[in-house]
Length: 385
Image (cartoon, rainbow, N blue to C red; front, side, top):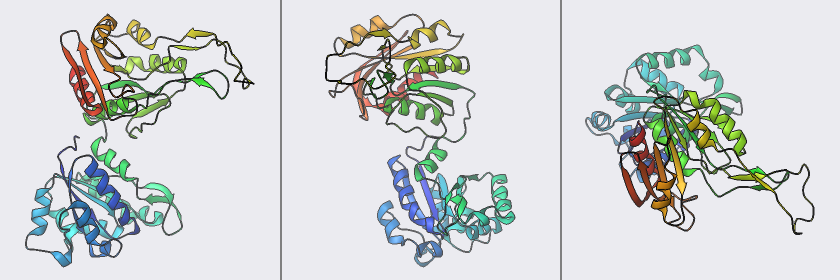
């Protein structure tokens, strides 16, 4: 689901996890959605409505600040209603339909998509009453974000912990794959060992690959990500295969290739590796050392050799001079889309949210321009869907 521009009503019920709803609100805003807040009386004892009014820049709907038909106005305004956290008491109110307070009133009046994020003591969460209520909500089409296992405010350990706000937002935005298509993408960088503590690598952060993976997830695709070391964080909805070096990445990609409709070679893979990696740390490293190198596996070439009918292959080309001309020379048989990027910001976009890029296909070309990595991902999706 594309969250950009959506209107979300955030319902907050009583429980210590109510303070985490502040962070959830901020996470949703960073994804460029509008948020309004509705609270139970119990919730206001943990975090005051003034806090949420300041964060959302909109009045909070509580029982003490209720106007006529406010439950209708707020519910009809929203595209999505998320109750997070949802206590056992509030869960029972949703099922009963009594509409005793603002959160359950909005639930009754909400015509659109509804989510609940239960958070409570693990024994309460696993009780037959709570599980039956959750199952009833699911049968009504309400979506449930399961609580995590961990240490709880009561001192016990078990399932009932409020999930990380980023994970909640990811669950809402990406959810389960709906399209019967699969993306296989390499992300990050590789590390080719010199000895147990040194290696040859590069500065790729994995942010471009992260943006691409999220774009395909957002559009309902299943995503397999073969990841080298990186700073980027992928949603849990990505099926990750973690590797370190080029050879491991090559084997993982070839093993998964047959499942993919689209393969995106986004990782910055080392072209060379030490011919022999020392088993122990090399002593006196400041002395002149002769490092003999050999080529690593060419993952792009290998996937082209094994390309199946209808499969699309995307490659990247980082160029420091004559970018467009050099990129055209790299566009060979088997490649369907070539992404060209240049070190416009002095580092090729490594670690940045923006990059200078162009797109080259068999039938069209998009000239070099400076833009966000999310914009690049969106254009790439349109070229491959």
